[in-house]
Amino acid sequence: MEQEFKVLERAIREIHDQAKKFGLDFFPMRFELVPADVIYAFGAYGMPTRFTHWTFGKHFYKMKLQYDFNLSRIYELVINSNPCYAFLLEGNDLIQNKLVIAHVFAHSDFFKNNIHFVPTSRNMVETMAVHAEKIREYEFKYGRREVEIFLDAALSIQEHIEPPSVFTGAEDEQEKDTGHSRPKETPYDDLWALDGKPRERPKERGRKIPPRPTKDMLAFIMRHSPELEDWQRDILAMIREEIRYFWPQMETKIINEGWATYWHVRIMRELDLTEKETIDFAHLHAVVTQPGKMQINPYYVGSKIFEDIERRWENPSPEEKKQNIRPGGEGRAKIFEVRSFENDVSFLRNYLTKELVEELDLFLYQKIGAEWVVVETDWEKVRDDLVSRLTNCGFPYIVVEDGDYQRRGELYLKHCYEGRELDVYYLEKTLPYVYLLWGRPVHLETVIDGKTTVFSYDGKKNSRR
Image (cartoon, rainbow, N blue to C red; front, side, top):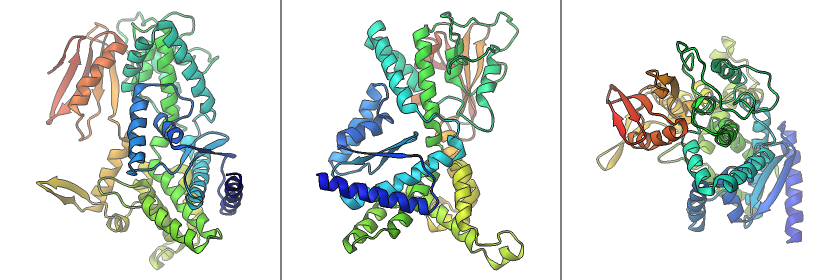
């Protein structure tokens, strides 16, 4: 075992040096070798130090069962932090670990340099440990069942936030909307009053709450719900902080995995591999980048787009040179630029070409009878459909329209419908959770079968009109 560790350490140093030669700029790396139970627990929770909840356990059981039956496998797990932690799976052979090591060096480069990660905290490992401890304290004080019920409700709407952004200053806008501005002394000062008293509603009955629709449902409920206790507001603040940390990872899945795949190939090619290692690497890489039948494989599509960008900017056509669209010789510089500024939506919209759609067979399919048939071949419509599915990380865009609906303190939400209907079953299961958080009837306006429909829950039953 000691000899294996020494071989692995040499491989890490060699890959580190090669990644640096290619110009990758990453955080200091910390590698840990862990058993399958541990790596799948981290994969289910998203972080080694996160609070416990039954939904994470459900994800762990599903992932671990697929691993046990050799149906799927986590090859790498890396955390966006400084230093950057990467976990290697015990039982991987040396060539598998070499590929993973090369892959996570590129991930760390992406975390450090992509603009969408700038607002995120780099010490969330410690922060989530603090959150977990506070939630354990609340379980001891108020009862584990009581806290679990509240977590169920909070997690049901956790994606409905205003994501961190370096462009819009979204947090400042949220503060303006509340009508409560005060100097910030802690990270939570902008979320609720720290004097131990719930926020009072503005007394001016004529003022709409919020003044304009707000996407950050979680923050709005946290600030304005008349029923929440301080410990419940604290939990909402923690969940909001954690999902804002994960958001950039969710909106850069294709470009991030594509970047890491693009580089692990080039790094591995520079290593002094044996003939057997070369064959094993080729097989493993083929497994990782195998095109998906029912959904996009981000490793495959992302890396192919990067390769296409590098080719087009390195060797433009004679016509492009003549029109000075692309002078040539800028392939490597261009992909580093793309890595720095794009997310999945802009990556696909700006760089998914007609030729790539055809090469990658990204046409839209639909099951008719017992067969899947192509229903759309226009490459721009295919691209736009993919982009629409990734907008807002694939979650429906719902805003808080009115926090004092009909002057009864009821909550009115509106789905910004853009051609995709909500899942009615999921909607009707979620509204009672929103009611639990708000404490009064809640309404959600959306479009069903082309007609404006309002779903409501009054604490006893769902209704629609």
